Image (tube, rainbow over all chains, first blue to last red; front, side, top):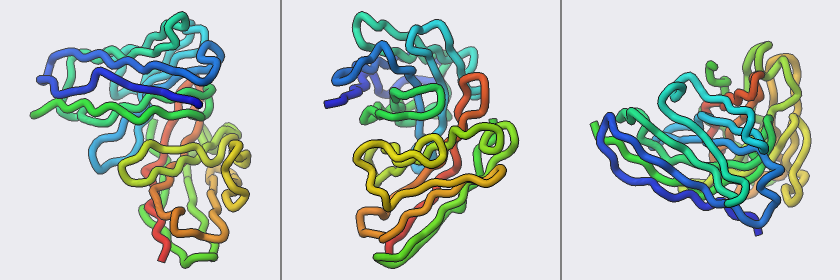
Length: 117
Length: 110
């Protein structure tokens, strides 16, 4: 069955960096666009990053532009999130999602990133 | 990239229907037929229930339906069941590979 498994979350200090990975299985990964969506504790969903199925198109939300980057390795069925200059307001559960430009068909279980103030 | 507007709460009795609205602008909801809806139970990952305004993914019951008029999209859940109690989020394409979510609606089954 379809699985997206995020890893790499944890507690990190403000100003530092962290990288998340998302391993995909059960579907044809290299034909799906990928996204990262986050959810702060007790808050709603926030879309933050997109990468096309080939990896040649990327987009980011204003809130993370210049600090977070998305990449993928289709040979490893994995998408990555590199987070730099982390802030307390980046504390959230980070979900990787597979879909199209327009929707998020499959979701991972999420990985918690905590940046204490 | 302003969030779409959803009512914070909605409710209905078992068997009834409830409709949740999602209002954006001409650069997102009104500009594209790419509105999707997600259901999230507490502590769980969201799940896609409607995509491209009206389409249901395989396995989603036909009790879930979507529509759009102008800058407002809507999700209707018919024949309410206890398991429908959850948070519901709309999401719209906003051009140039951007997506924007609504603030979410907590649906309570009375």
